[in-house]
Image (cartoon, rainbow, N blue to C red; front, side):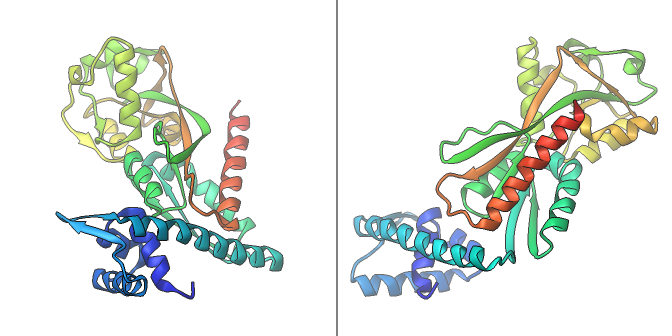
Length: 303
């Protein structure tokens, strides 16, 4: 934009942190502070209250934010309408995904997207579900795909595709010759859990409670931060776990691991997460629509 100060103000007002705004804008914190002070000098009033290491909008700041939202939105509309008119598909979109999705679903999706839109650059951020939701909320990423349910009134959440979680054991484990596993049978073996904040862990904990157990009743020798690490530990006979069925296809075919359904079944969904208020570029829309169609095709082919 022609007035960089307004964009800086809009970012600071959105996250209420000079430090976080500087990170999002790729600026130093003193540079952000300088831009805000210049804008306050122009208006001859303070736009932020600064006290006890916290900032908040003043009444004047709230009014400036109201107009800034309109100005930035109109500027974006103008920019995107010209790009659409000229057929310009260049640009950058940032996608975030929780670990399981990034490892087993996104490679195919991003490969197909790249073939259709070779001029669009996609930047991928990988973290657990809680971290991805936070990145969407503070505009670090444009679109998140997560494996846990999201409760946030400021975000748009849409189901992507279903997923079944299955018990995974080594071929030499006593459960390996079973056809299914009940929740109470999980107590008898060391159980390898994901870290706090993982969508998979949250889903498993809820499932256990629904079936009369608590995660504290499990013998949990350690926790690991990725599905790949868990599969390696299970393969080494260090314990058993529950992971996405989509993550087990290769190892099961090779006879390295055994995948067993739970009784009752443990199913969940993957979800798209977007901001309600954030201005959407046509590139963001293209990525979202492509991802939605990709998930629908994957679900149909699995039936």
